[in-house]
Length: 400
Image (cartoon, rainbow, N blue to C red):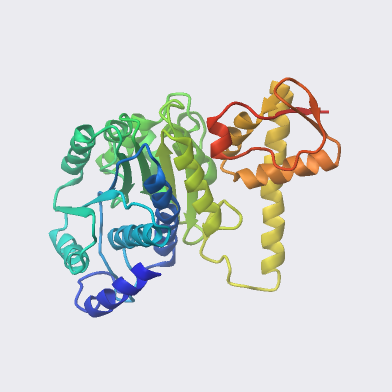
């Protein structure tokens, strides 16, 4: 609340003179809302960690700082979230960790607009640097800075490119290889899907060269992208999500954003730490009650609007039940740590798994044991949280 008040007067004063798009489109706002939720959820947690000394936030394609309609862009959102974190620390009498904010765009006018917005306020204990570099140079800059930082520092990298041509596998892997960084990447997946078949067949078409390079760079040879024709958009998003795991070396998640019947975008989370995944999944469901993504028509009412939303939600949770049943059939006995990780990797909240297990327990479909296989009857919670994940297994679960 404090940060919103601080920047409200700034954006109102500067919105008229900023040379930017007049209004933010709903799908772009949905993207920024999820980014804000992720930072708001995660910054206080990182700040409270005794193992983290500094929090670094990189915005590689910062775009505009504020739109003419008063909505703010990603760099100002990051600054707001830092201020909210400071307010949280002050309210709870916690020490404020040092933060750094690195802001870049190849459009110097956009960088200057953002600099003017943010520099009018002194964000204490936060170093802010501005760059006017093309993507390849900025990726190198990010990588070199991360390598120079102490191992106790955590890095959050937001990548919202103008298309996909600047994104390459090595640049992303360099950022992730330190095991101290997390990436949120935004891509125009419908546009990519629409021209994938042509890019792979019309090899002489230079206008598909960037997409072709992206496909061969990221997707393994056995991907559906190569083996199937006309891969549906949601399967295409899943293939991208799997590719960004770099052979399951990192955790990944996706969140689709639908602008209209043919235009889809997607945000991807990539990181080494399961708690980062947890916070992204939390933000994902917070911004869409179905946990799937943003549809521009969602929430617009209609005769069957709320009924259909509840129906879709039940279908979504039913999918979790199917996946969990298959896991038990394959594994036999599972502990709470395994179920916590499984739930997040399938993009559900731990509370959803708790709800499912509670129902199974009520229906006598599952037995719960202690680690030494003592049958337990009075179990209320199931230890499906990060703190329990860090320790030894507390419960064992076996389907009847």
